[in-house]
Length: 439
Ligand code: SAJ
Image 1 (cartoon, helix red, strand yellow):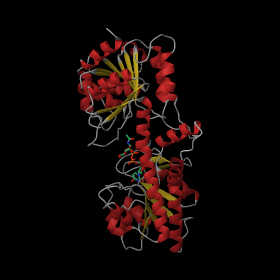
Image 2: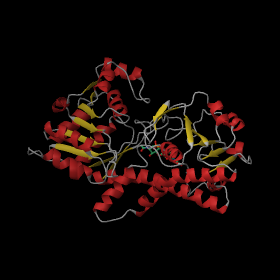
Image 3: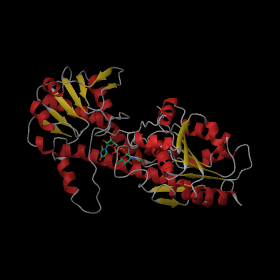
Image 4: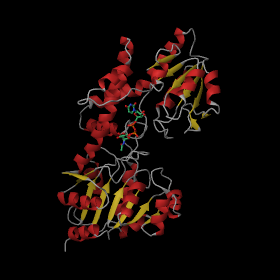
């Protein structure tokens, strides 16, 4: 029997032994979904704290209930280890490791490279490997395939199977989860696509199979580049509307009444998170190696990156109009996380706004119910103010940077001298109030 047939049988019967490399916000939910489907799953992570927590039946990912981890561990369907040698017993391996950017703005492939090297050490016939980490097109074929093919005669698409399937995890989201979010799958060969699709469809409701790993890699980059560019568009629309003396929020609401052919995005103080500001740069980086300049990505990135500076300039102008100077003014920043109702600070524009305000000599404090402390760009450790309304009263200006839904905006408006609202968090509350300006 061919390795393909044998592996397909193991996958369909759920007898295949599954490993997930990287037990973070993508890997742990995926491991749990495979375990719930009946596979025996081993989560592999070099972070021994994660390994210990999981083996003790504890979850550290908000979307994965501890009770679920505890049950699966007790049932022997899920376990964790930092020992990569278990890979020699595995039949199916998902790679869910980080793909950040280096300080230079180039892709940091180190996590993918080390995971691939570990798998390469334990390569054997009848193995399917799926890369989930967001990366530039060609990574699966140009980086993983050569590394996994070294030192043996195993042939991809016959003896082992290799594919790419972009992660679509949105932490905190309850409506679209790992099980019900359609999953794109693209293999190095048709047999790779088939084996990887059969594996994933045992646990995930909808698999959309494409003809190559590159098509799957690019689908993910299109998704998030689309988002980044459209956010850049509305950010530039905010700048243009301000020059035209028109309320951009009113314009967007009006455009959003169009039931087709328009998708609403809203302006803000910049682009945060570990996906949207970063994924498109993987594509523009790859295109530069092919002597092509991805103009839309570069332009949108420039606009989005400049938004914190634009916010601070708008605040300076607003204070000047009130015969005040930013230098020496007490400015309270509301909301530090990169988007509402989460505690994630990664790439948060609030850090840039705070840094720029400090550079201009403002006396800066911040409040965020989800972020008790943060390290400002100048190295200072800041702490969220204890008494929000007292801090609002003492501030010369309040800047709403992240519009957490649990803020009492009416009380904040009542207590404030001046508010610069970068998210239209006040909505109609501050419509004609001279103490309020919006982006
Ligand atoms: N933002 C705006 N205006 C918008 C939307 C977002 O300024 O209209 C800002 C946010 O404030 C934030 C940044 O962009 O700083 C990113 O926000 P996001 O809503 O895109 O949230 P993320 O970064 O968590 O994006 C994830 C992505 N999911 C995956 O990559 C699997 C993205 O593709 C999803 O569309 C997004 O979640 C989502 O819809 O929640």
